[in-house]
Length: 85
Image (cartoon, rainbow, N blue to C red; front, side, top):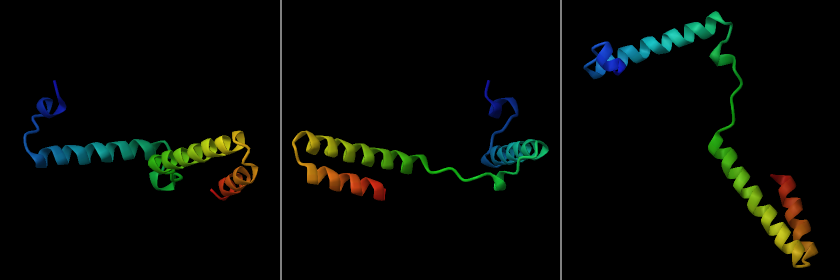
């Protein structure tokens, strides 16, 4: 059975109040353990990291293709651009 049915939460307001209560409880548990959410370091956005990874993979593929095709100057420029990332 769902929490909304168990606690007889029928309206948006009741559900919102329950959500707020739960958030406060979780925060208090963290504080009791000396964990202050505002003091935790920010993590990098996963989408940003995925995009950077895709970009670097693509660049590495181009470097490899250029290297295998004997285009040494071109792959050296690719490596220089990677260092800027």
